[in-house]
Image (cartoon, rainbow, N blue to C red; front, side, top):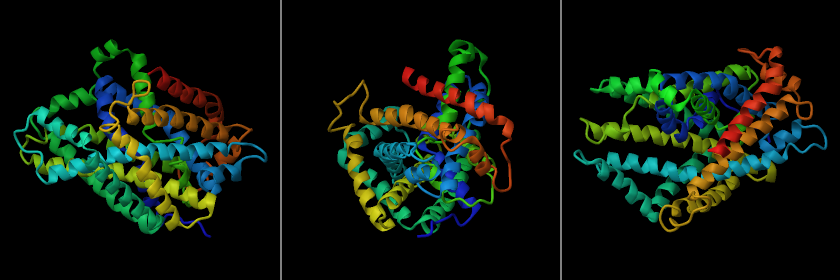
Amino acid sequence: MERESFKSRLGFILVSAGCAIGIGNVWRFPYVAGENGGGLFVLLYLVFLVLMGIPVLTMELAVGRASRKSAVLGYKKLEKPKSKWHIHGWFCMLGCYLLMMYYTTVSGWMTSYFYKFATGTFESGMTSEQVSGVFSQLQSNPIEMVIWMAIITILGFLVCSRGIQKGIEKVSKVMMIALLVLILALAVNSILLSGAGEGLKFYLVPDFEKVSEIGIGNIVSAAMNQSFFTLSLGIAAMEIFGSYMSKDDTLPGESVKICALDTFVAIMAGLTLPNVFVNMAGGRIWGTLFFLFMTFACFSTIIAVFENIISFCIDMFGISRKKSVVINAVIILIASLPCVFGFNIWSGFELFGQNVLGMEDFLVSNILLPVGSLIYLLFCVTKFGWGFDNYLAECNTGKGMKFARFLKPYFQFVLPILVLIVLVQGFIK
């Protein structure tokens, strides 16, 4: 059966950026930037995005594009005979399932908030305690939580059931363009509010007093972590879209565009002020638009990871797309229940001081993503794996920005150490 492909280059970039633009990045970036010296953190984040994020992203895409397969078979096609790199492909899938076991719940929260703002649950004059009480009420109600989780999950699988061009690419194009328009409108609206200047200063102007208080080492560490995790690398979420790419454009050029879109949305998100929507003029409209934006940000990641899971099952077990969609929809719906119940029925359950969501997030973010990225990196740059020459040739195929051969020592010796630092930092925290 001929492998599907993207209809257009724009479709690939928007779908891939949609995978990267997730709730963690959009929600976390402004807070982490403000807490770590504002503009200095943003500058360091951009530096590490170039030094780490873009190179590792090209590696995942290169494995996908060169093999035209999902994770396990992608490794098998490119690895040397009798080598075992493909075992990592199974861990990639474990990471995708684990990520969706809690990401569907968080996405359900965003969809619920969108619905609550649109229907007037949040009324003008509510105190901050009353606003947070709405969220507490949602968390304590397992039936409502399951309904919102199920809605976002079933919608995601419905989109994926239509395939790459008719489903994911078509929906992502509309959704990502709407997402970009929404975030621009929200950012402009927030900037025009009185007192917005102070917020912008806190966010984007370097605060050297805070820098000396926190320590430059901690800020560098935070910037490294954010630049690395923003792209969701290491669990083949990007590799699968590489397998649908054409050979017309180079991977460094496409990776820069994906990172630019991801960063643009993250920085713009920091200019919005969701906490003041309730009591501002037209707050119901702006609050509704903000949580529509957040729902789109979540949903774009969900359909990207679902596609990886679906494609993996099609490749490995030779089943149809429809059958893979149905089987995985049932698996994800059931597997997402522990996270939902961790806030109510099983609220007393903790492991290493973490609830179910915290534990699942730790396994994905602190182990599977950095370890997976390190494996992709070593596979692409060492003679024991695919090899640097093969990787570089795939990277530079097509028109656009190319990586120079003199970068080989950096890719082989410096980059693995940087990724290792991120991994160690995750355990220290």
